[in-house]
Image (tube, rainbow, N blue to C red):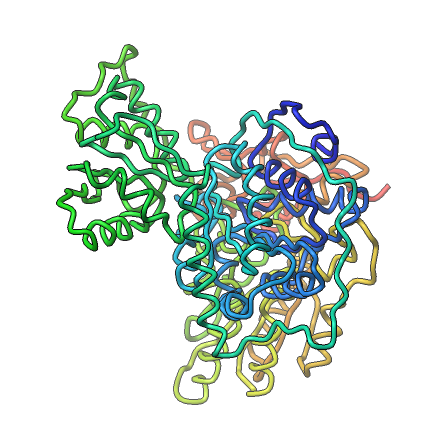
Length: 628
């Protein structure tokens, strides 16, 4: 991988994942600075950049959050540096204030934001369309489809950013980030161009009179896009049926047109420059069209803007409306959906399938914690402690691995979860109401990475206003959900440097919190601490500290054997409805429904041994340990 990213081999053809193509494009652009907060589907980009940063003489960091990342990139741009900020759709919203201000004061060195959308929410809590943020901020928007376009668009985006003096947004989606394709490498610059000294009267300040110049930059981008090579058309000159597609929809449309053999009847307009739209170029193909099918993910962004262009020029066009069954507005497009849409538009029956469909009745599988995850033990103990209360407690969740605690994996451990970093603020509101008649314990949870990302301002607010609540920090020593990227508490940077880690207990103590630390695998002690803190008024914090099981398994020196003593397993008689498979829910614990007995899967089990401490019948046994 590193050779592909740093080899100066123009013309070399390499098989690349989309995230790798982003990295290669950034290196070919000669970036000076890169910053990100991890978020799938683009988590790997900054990780790869960090590994090659010193070799290519640029700086890369995992920032505490996306706001820090974008604002640091603005700083690098002020010195004439080319800066790349990588976020996912949720993170882009976090940057809104900085984004809109930067769009008005502009940039000096090229500043490109890569935002990765996740249609279908494969690795997200929700799906939404970040293209609207480009419209709202008034900045150019590009969207690649192939791996080659992804690589090539990065240098183009930096060049465009500097020509306009404006940020440029490049939107990619999950299928682009994780897809693979051949890429022809371009030349690498020998070294990054020199930075520009910041002079006394240089200015990048957001003031109201800069709105008009920002609009002029947007118009300049539209003129540039009118002749862009990233927009292209195939099909008859005067097509009555027109498909307009962006992103993955373009590839699916090409396949459908080919399979239906209608390339001489249907036109395909592929757009890579999505905002501002190249109106004159688009009009060439809208004017002869009678029926238009728009293929895009997720919102009808293109459709609404194309309808506006058609209405402005009084064109009589039928735009095929999206519905649940026709080009749905929720989830991803796929070849079957697009094939059906194109077939309906053209009035041509679908080709018969040569292979008969085989319907398999597959069981639905919920998301779950990894085997040995300490969060499973924490939520099990929390649920148990809250059930002892006179009134049911309220648990507020947050975003991270522990988001799955809202399902059976965590005993349905929380009732509300908004967005990343919101947990402490939602709990603070509830905690204040305990003085006004709300007779329930209020608990919120966050991970160690989330603690640094967005919890700190809410923590200060809750402490200052003396909220009655318990904050549980789930410290597993990693940004585990997105691939174990470092954060300020780990003592490691994106470029591999060892630094002094931020101490969460000291930070909590500094803002006036009462802090205790427990190990969720020390079941008896942790349960007592939880019960005591639930009775304690005021703002309290419990750090549940146990390393991520996946990381810990790699470091384990002696094997740990966990098994079920079948002579002690009492089956249905354990009194908790099959504890191993249903209540505890660890993938390492399995239930044999024929034998009505539990057993441990030696492949999945990581040997944490917590199940042995909790097993009602005492049937689960542990042998060995991590220490030599």
